[in-house]
Image (cartoon, rainbow, N blue to C red; front, side, top):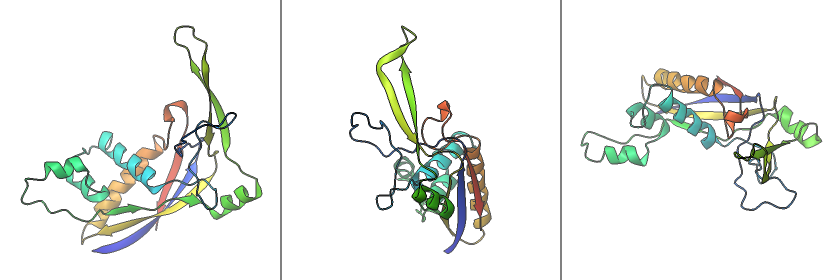
Length: 201
């Protein structure tokens, strides 16, 4: 099996929220914070978030299905897929082809966060009472977002057999294009998470 690395860069176009999963909210605090590196406290994009989004869009919009051999070979087999293959004597589980590394701030933006030139933003939202058409009692919430123009950089490790690389790159590029025309993270229907993703050697 051979290996190649592709560099990936994500530019945030509208506020990005990938949640940290708050267990409790302090009075006056943020209801939903973004995930941050525990050492530096800088926001980052988990590789699993990008991988999951690409896979989901390929299955829902890209012409592949959850049980497609290609998707399960490239992104890793799901438990449902393995159950379906249980009685297939010809099936041999292969190594997952695409390994997504976490994406960290570009060096330039890291310095800007360190100097306070860039900070995360806090967007206040309300929940509407459907009967009254007004703000619901207790329906005020504060969402932390990474602001537009911030860039994240990372790597995708591609593991492949002979004559397989071109097809893997084709599927990956298609998935990235689908994300560019959709959103990353939460609350995309409310304008969050528009991104521009570029893949390079």
